[in-house]
Length: 243
Image 1: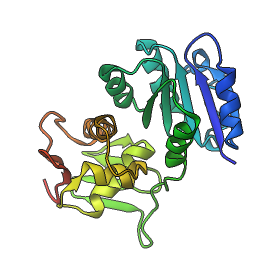
Image 2: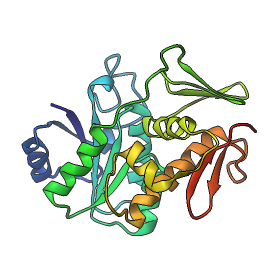
Image 3: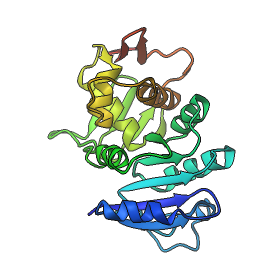
Image 4: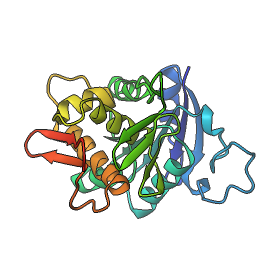
């Protein structure tokens, strides 16, 4: 049984959604997004801003009607508190909203109404993804100017430590496994997000592009002119073996 944290960005909680998630066999805790503030001084040690044990939350569902700047701020706060993947579930899904949600750390973005079977499949794809694991002989991935601790998901570049989300770390490790070779976006979707479909939609492919953009902001000196994580136009991405 997985523990899902259902956070509502709006005033009311969708009781029907709670029932659907529980019918899937998950343990569900509902909370309001306004409690996801950065002040954790009143919370027990090891608990996030929503009061849930950080290590006990397997996945976060952020439920909202019409996403706005407050919704995406809540998304960033939750990502800072919990290492679990986060899914935005919204009634509005224009391309700008989807891209903004993904750029703010969401692992997936679903537009309501969404069928129970589709919802279950997308959540299951996120829940079954294995987290990055250290190499048997070492826990540090050496990428020249960039070093990544595969146990803590911390990257060090130019003496500065940056924290990678689980999705960003999986993406980086997937590219590192074939360092110097091109990885198509469809392949990355399967290996990093667990999307195994015959055909991927443009929205699916934007998941990869948005995560690459976030990763570049953390590991590249100049994200607008990347020298480590390169784009292969019309195909995908590759991790340069040297700077």
